[in-house]
View 1 (cartoon, rainbow, N blue to C red):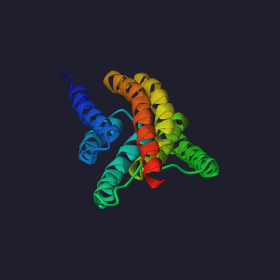
View 2: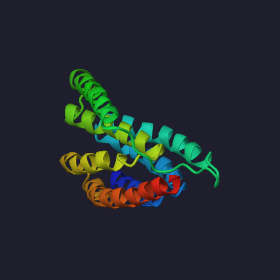
View 3: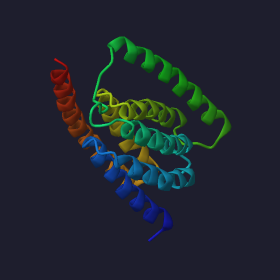
View 4: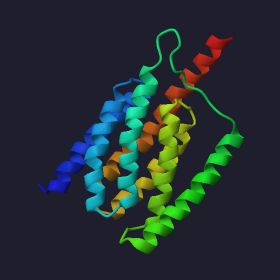
Length: 193
């Protein structure tokens, strides 16, 4: 078995554990996310998906942030699933689109990156979705549904079949995450009444 295939399998297992635990709002998700991201960084550099390697480096940082954010709350005041306004989302989408175009241009003109613009868009929006996940914003799951669906093709195109299957599983589980966090969101709103 090739080294990249072994790394892809290990990364897939760790990243899948992260997703299952984050859906369950279990703080241990962040440890698995950090480990899975560290393994993935190497793989994406090897397959010339440079934006993805930047993204997974960001995931390591956000794993630490998420762990701290989720653990800084006590039983009396836990971090609850919340939501923000549509206008805030529009602002974030416009800002993220501008960043994605800039990153895509940079990688298109200065590297040998594959699909630099497509890769940049999924990367930048994953930055945003990860931040929303760390602060437990319900709408993070809408972003993940789109990102994971698009990433299936991106990984298949680069010969990362195992990661493509992982993205398919992520895509399906993103709907589960949305439903679970929707339930938590409604429950936390009811508790405030």
